[in-house]
Image (cartoon, rainbow, N blue to C red; front, top):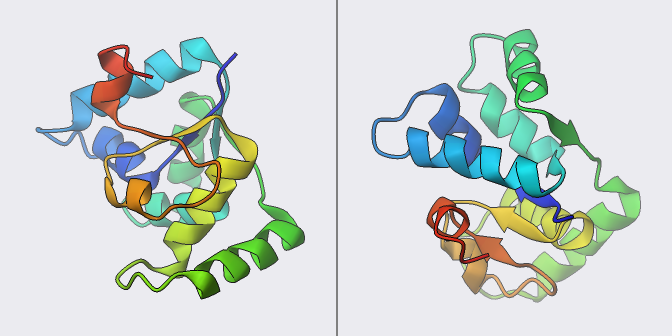
Length: 138
């Protein structure tokens, strides 16, 4: 059983029916769900909800996709701050570190289209794209 953390860009692709990425993101989520559980953290919920008509709608969509919420916890949040403080890479916001460390701690992999997560060097983080999942590369 493989657990997958889902990044907000994947969910936004699906809900917006993005003409370029929507279909592959949806299929990747479905494939990941067949392999195990799907998880998101608070930052992903917040980013995803900005593209929905309401908080209620965003939660209904997440429930329909059978994506579970898992809090990173106080210890995890403190560790995010520690990891971010050690990084000199500019351009990555704190929320990205929250998403990355949440995935590294609670899932086997992070499904995202953001290649920058791979360069963050968060210990234990395995990044896959929809193409990786659909091509059997994960």
